[in-house]
Amino acid sequence: EVQLVESGGGLVQPGGSLRLSCAASGFTFRSFRMHWVRQAPGKGLVWVSRSDSGGSTTYADSVKGRFTISRDNAKSTLYLQMNSLTVEDTAVYYCARDGDGIASAHFDYWGQGTLVTVSS
Amino acid sequence: SYELTQPPSVSVSPGQTASITCSGEKLGDKFACWYQQKPGQSPVLVIYQDSKRPSGIPERFSGSNSGNTATLTISGTQSMDEADYYCQAWDSGTARGVFGGGTKLTVL
Image (cartoon, rainbow over all chains, first blue to last red):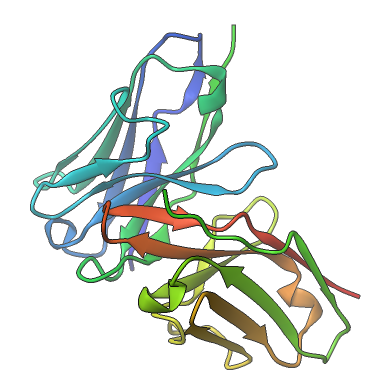
């Protein structure tokens, strides 16, 4: 059974940092592209970042230069290092597995999400 | 940057057919997919690669994609289908994902 379990969320002050983790199980993690998607309270889904199995990464404009996605294939874990956080980064952060990862992308499994609250 | 547009809300009577659209420039040249999200839950993939259903998704969910518009169709809509629905595509030029703004489906 595929499982994705996020952790690391919490309350942080503006300008602070946080590192999210996503522990994967039930599939060959190193073979799949993985993503982070966020959802601000009462708002829609927003794609944040992607990590290919080969190591390539991309970011949404809103987080580029502040967030860093990485993965440890030996631990089957995806990470999101978030720096210079602002109130606009307040959201539930989901990690998601990419069921395609070749010509396109669709997210066939999602974690339960971890809430990040940026507030003074 | 690439954008996808959805109507904010759609209403349907039980047993009727609901159609939710998603518009984007030359969207038909990309693969579109759809997610269902109920309050307090993580999204669930209901359609991928325009028209394919993942295992466990009822046959009443179908999808199409042509020109500038992708459509999610729910036939014989049930009260359990009341949820927010999001379309999504992959912008291969920038290697970034894109979501539509979401559509709240009300079954009444």
